[in-house]
Image 1 (cartoon, rainbow, N blue to C red):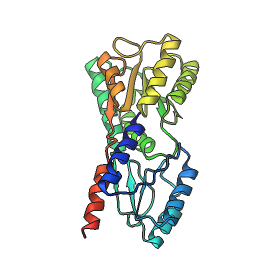
Image 2 (image 1 turned 90 degrees about the horizontal axis):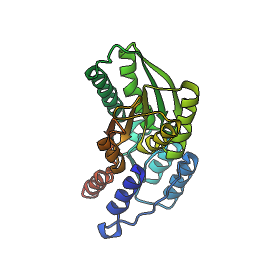
Image 3 (image 1 turned 135 degrees about the horizontal axis):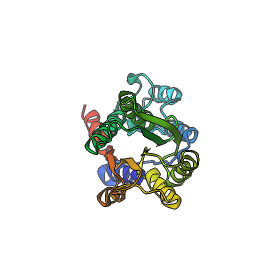
Length: 255
């Protein structure tokens, strides 16, 4: 759901009416295909290449080829592991700060409920392995796990940011651990899958439930679940970064 909003923003921003000829590839979560597509764009002598990287690593050859071809590169949403001089700029959200915000919220919520000294079990339905969103949210939230000695992270598994994988991973966690105090999902689609798994297992969650469900992205449907009390907290990740790149391109073109 978040990705659809980000894609729509890019298509609207780089439209023909705004003076752009946009070539767009959906890599369908295939990092190798994404890098091949980027190389093909560079070979077509485009002016600008915008990469929304599925994973952070393995981009050096693409970025070097772009430099040699005189193609200016922007990085959107997630980040790339490389020297910053290899691209023009990155525009996106601070994933580590999102993870920290979730940890701070949970700490304050447990204290408010008088549960700050209880042993708290936690599982994470994580995002795609190697993605900046997964790395940042895990790193930020882990600071609060280390800070609170009574919090125990039982497991973290890759839910690939999809509802189907979120449900499958949550089913595995339920079979292995039974009742879990806190479930952290790295995006809303995973949270929707986890909710289905919890419902089918007869485990209550949300308002008055046994399990606290935390999510990221805060798309419209999930905010409705927050209002109804099923998702206890959802942390915003803004999908509308494309206009910032458009502004940067305008400034480059005007010198």
